[in-house]
Each structure stands twice: as C-alpha cells, then as structure tokens.
Amino acid sequence: MKALLQSRCAICEAVSHHPVCEACRAGIQSPDVACRVCGVALPSPTQTLRCQSCIQTPPAFASIQFVGTYVDTLAALIIRAKIRREVGALAALDYLLTIYAMEHPQSQSQPLPQPLPQRVTDYHLLAMPIPTARLMRRGFNLPQLFAQRLSSAWQLPVLAPDSVALPFYQRKQATLPKAARQKNHHHFQINRPLPSKIMLVDDIFTTGQTAGQLAKSLRKNGVQHVDLFVFARGQLGDF
Image 1 (spheres, one colour):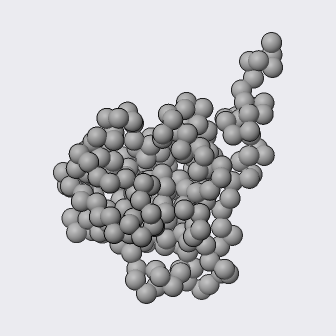
Image 2: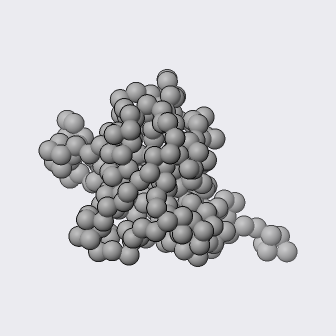
C-alpha cells in the first residue's frame, strides 16, 4: 500500500519523492559553454562569450537564460504539457523551474550566470503571448505559468497577459521547417504602457525569430532593456 501511495518520476516512472527523480534531472542536457546572448553552444570559452552571429548582428535582446537543451527529456516534457495537457508533465516542468530559480537567485548581491546590463530586481516579466485561437483551444499559456513561477521565486512583477497580444491566428512556428520559421513574421500588438526593463519568458527557443521580433517591438515601444528566459534552448541539429 505504501508503494502505491508514493509518487513517481514523470520521466522514467521510478518511485520518487519529487516529480522528477535525481537521475533524470541529472540527465538534462545543457551546453558546457554557450553564447550569453542567444544561448547557442560554443566550442570553447571566449573573452566575450558571444557567438559570431551575435557579434556581427546583435539581436534586440541582450542575454538569455535557459534550464536546458530542447532535446530528449525536456522536449518530451514540454510536448506532453502543451499538446497533451498532462498534469504530471506540468508538475515536472514546474519542479524543474523551481529548482533552477533556487539555484540561480536574482538579487542585487547575486549576479546572473549570464551578465545582464543591470541586476534584474527592477525588471518586469512578460510571458510570450500566443494567438487567441490557440489559447482558447489549449486553455492555458505555458510561458505565462513559467512567468508566474519565476515571479514567486525572484520577486519580480509579471505584466498583465493582455499587455502584448497576437492576432487571432498566426502560423505556429513548430509546424514550419527551419527556413520557413525564419521568414514567418509575427505582428505583435502593444496594448499598455511598458516598463523600461523586461525579461521575456518563453518555453522554447529554436531559431529565435519569435523572441527577436517581439524584442524589436518592445524596443520600438520604449523598452530600453530586453532579456530572455526560456525553459529549453534548441541547438543546431536538434530541430
């Protein structure tokens, strides 16, 4: 009876005291060295910790943080949470995000792992919006759930979900090949006055087109600093 009452890991289904067991959490992949701006894996450390692309054509956002690489474990969990709406997968993602936030405190005395222009104590969190039709169909916006968790952990305010909106329908990036994703432009609608510093929260970063386009829109509307937090960062060859 006691074994039946014990929880199980959402990934391997082994008996675990947490939604993700220690072995599966240790197996989450992440680059040894990554560009501090876009998060792409670097072959070795450099003085600036920036990739050639970000040096030659800097994006509208200044830096990125992510839990791990969008492959295997994290990819499966995100798909199960977003598409299948599995409660266990959502709990696992929330647990992993909580652990990350605890291990990477954002305070004036504790700098970010990837340096930002300022400490993030005066940043606002903004969840990546999704088209209204998709939100109605899915019933929730995963980046919004992530933003709420980070808000609780880091004591940062979250901007209202309707601060930035997408039209009723937009082509979904995941349904497009890489070349088409890079040409697929989202048209964001800014509905409210925005603060000067925003940390944009998203679930997946692959080509960076969506995040880059929103960051440009934010900058055009008076936001001075835009930084990213994404749960999983895709690497070349993973998508």
